[in-house]
Image 1 (cartoon, rainbow, N blue to C red):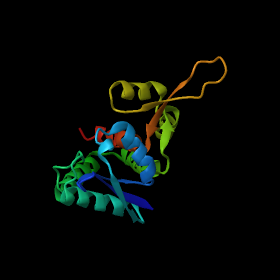
Image 2 (cartoon, helix red, strand yellow):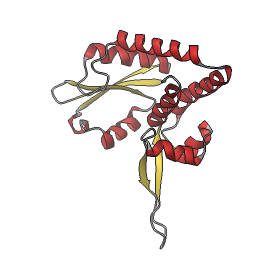
Image 3 (cartoon, rainbow, N blue to C red):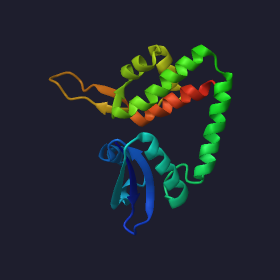
Image 4 (cartoon, one colour):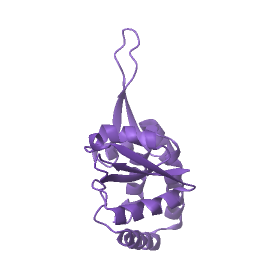
Length: 183
């Protein structure tokens, strides 16, 4: 079950439309990363049986309801669909059988990643099969975003900082890896 959520301000103006497996968890991420979070006064949730159905509903809502804070606000549903289809055709024409296998694996990971809220950098590295040095290079180049969490204070030891990646950051990184071969 995937949820389509809408955030409204106190005047009932639509601020943002998004999808998530857990709207409550996603709301806490918006609290930390969205400049418009304090404007939210109402949240509505609509449930869909599949992620694909929720994505279609989200694209339609962004295109037709004109939320104030969505990044893809200016793109209409049809434009987004045509652009993705065009990119997909170009990508599929250029890849070898080995790359197709890698593409299928990454595509599967893209669907699976939604089932966990956060991943450690080690988990990201293991899931996509890259070295620690490659992962650090992607981070340094700004291709993989992360956030830091303080660990618990234990005795006289200093507090350890853990680097984590949200499911959405992981999906964006997988999209970057897939699209890297198209350029």
